[in-house]
Length: 225
Image (tube, rainbow, N blue to C red):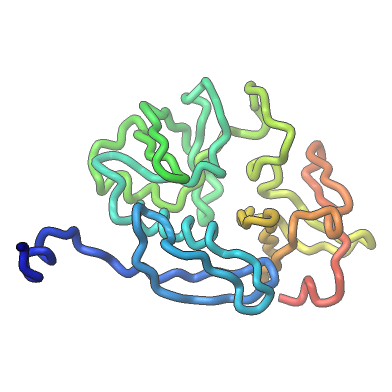
C-alpha cells in the first residue's frame, strides 16, 4: 500500500488562484479556488443578486493559467474574443492600454476546455507568449471578409460611443463581459469613471454600427459609478 507521503509526492502541485469578480449588478466578490482541469469545481453566485458567476470565474482561471505559460510560444485566449477567419494574416492584437494594433499570423490553434491555445508566428519562447497575456485577438471591423453570425460579437461594439436618449454622453465601450444570462458592457467615460450596462433590450434602445453609436435607456442608479 502506498503510504501518505508517497501519494502526496505522486500528485501534481495544486495552486490556489485568487478570483475577483464584478457582477453585472455592480457587486464585487473575491475568493480563492483550487481549479480542476482549468475549471471551477463548484458553481458560484453573486452574493447580492444571485446571478451565476461560474463562467466569469473560469475566465479568470484561464487568464491566470495563461500568465503561468501556455507552453513554449503558446498563448491562451478565451474563445468569446475570437472571430472566425480564414485569413490569419488579417488578425490583429491590441491591449487596453495601447490603441495601436499589431498584425499577427496564427500558425495553429487548439481547443482546450473553453479556451484556445494559439501559436502566433514569431513567438518561440514562453517569455514571448507571456507578453501577449491580456491582449485582444480580433479582426478589424472595417474589413470583415467572413460570414458573421446573426448574434452580436464583442468586436462589433468595442469602442462604440454610448449616450442616453436625451443626448447625455456616457463614454465608450471598453469591454464586453460575458455572463450566463447576458453580456454586460463596460463603458468608460473620458475621466476614467466606469459603469456597467447589461446588453438587454430593456436598456439598449439602438445600436448604430455604421456611426459607432449606442443609445441606452438607463434606470435610476444604473449610471452612478
